[in-house]
Image 1: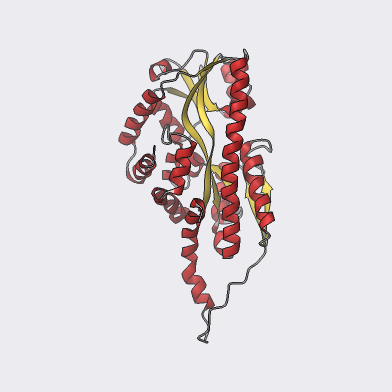
Image 2: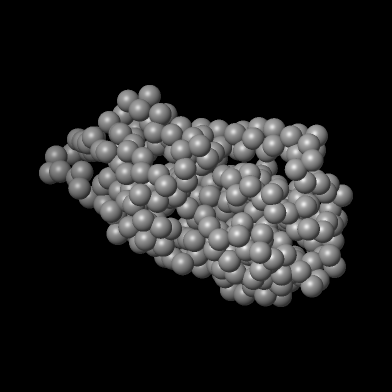
Length: 339
């Protein structure tokens, strides 16, 4: 069984007692098989059609499920058509949305420990994220989320690492001193700023270009795909490849999961597995192309000699002191699968 399939199978066990009771008859023969129904599942996300999460993620899930021919149809609603992150999380919990692609920090509104996936330097790289999700160490997070919300985790991928940009190079924590750095306003991102030694300024993503252009903030951090989308080389001189945080997405599903037949569950799980690999490959290819263009051009200077060890050691010390309870348990489970 594939690692994420093994994970999903754990949730299926929760439905077994009820199914057995429903299947029991007066005779002593074999219990009848659960009748397989046809379902059209709503899959929602906030990304544009050309972003990896949509093109290589959601669309791949839909295509793979269609090819499996198990009575499932995936209907995609992208670009926040069914609401913003907070609204969609509530809709998944209520069952109005069947499948959603969400960032870990956004899911923290439902189950706070899951936001630890977005902690600075929690993961060494995308391979570390995959190793954690495939290991039994992730059970504490995945099952905790399911217990708290009734929502199943079908898979997780990295949509790229986040990097610093500014009008000065940032190669070590001391370089952040005195800079007003834009960070997203979620609690975990603001903790990341503290952990890295930055002074955080909250600015809406849509207003970031103008804020940098007008000098309201000195720098910011985002994955490469966002740096391109925002045209930040026009208003910043340096991109420092700090890779201080993975931009992690989770594919989650409502309680509709328990209504699927075993064959349908296996097909959906396999489709998500394929999408996880597809998104990872798309992100890597896109980033390599963009970095090659930046290195050979004069849009801005690419700073490669970032002391990531200095940043990561500082961040780990901070979080081991900051996190308590379930959040600390999740953080230690993640770090236990490093390297």
